[in-house]
Length: 157
Image (cartoon, rainbow, N blue to C red):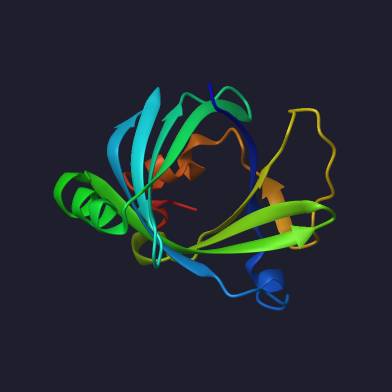
């Protein structure tokens, strides 16, 4: 079984705008299933497609199965079967021997910037960059599968 251990953080927008970033990659991401116990998503990058199945999150851990699929099949799945969709640019930044994936959202989630770090164990130590605000790993409203249903623009902050 594939296991993902991932922690999620909000990014300080002001600090983020001043750091040097690599070129980001645009993602089109749609959900075929958005059940709280499982999600099935299709993701399309500029030249690849992926099908991902994720189980329920328990803390920072959950089952995950991801498969590369043909680009055109990803587009067809998104166009014909996606029940909800979002788009974002993902930046990958190496910081203190860990890869941080930072998502800047578009559309109904514009203004939201979330960083994720994948770990080998739940106890693994890592350094938090200065552009991180706070951890939201267990706050379900920040799950991508929930952002498609209850987007950032509708939140009462």
